[in-house]
Image (cartoon, rainbow, N blue to C red; front, side, top):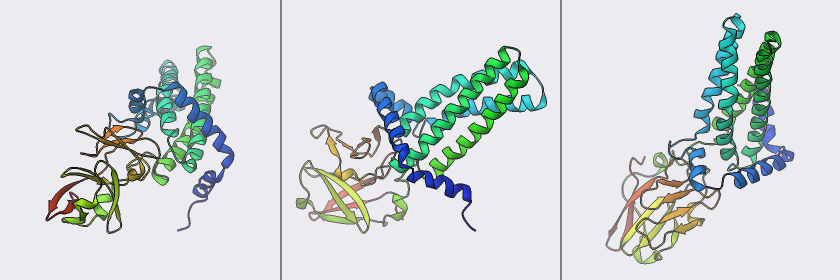
Length: 292
């Protein structure tokens, strides 16, 4: 089956370099306003274990869709007006979470994301106008603006779905690592070949790993950042002399525990696969749980 023309049109947004200035301005604004790493983690959804934005948008979309049903049936205008206002207010925190995610995407993804964000701004403006019209007793124009807002937010939702599922923004990019990793214990070389207290990039077959040796203790993770597949071995080692050193991804700054692979700071929300290690006759071997 041929690829739908609509998808091809959206894919062309990836090459719209004129959108880079808008994405850069948004990135600068998010960096300036959201300075606290803890707040950024909440906006990315680190405490939830997956991005916050897709969950947060359920409130405004649900409210607006419900208002649309009431408007279409001509019932409960007061309830419809309340739902329109609720949607407009609840869209604000959803937009902030989305902006935080958008500020940490690849250029091709961010170009689509900017259009998605712009459409959402238009939808909120239409629904705000719809609410004000209804408050002024102008139900007919309020309903018309509401239907226009629903059309725009539906198109924006399609773009958001395309960004998430077609372009894998917000997806766990390390989820498939265990399925590709060979089962059983695998050698990664002599213990003496691993430098002390340094991140070391290694491979088992075609699967990249990052290792940290501390004496006879070897911490090993997949070398694929769960946010956007950044090479962790090229990142920064944090807390070198602590009991739980971490690695910071060089691409977008996600921080993971070298011992467990757990996320310490976003934008990543999913852990990086962690491997068991052992030393047999001076050779380091690793085991990926659930490999293969």
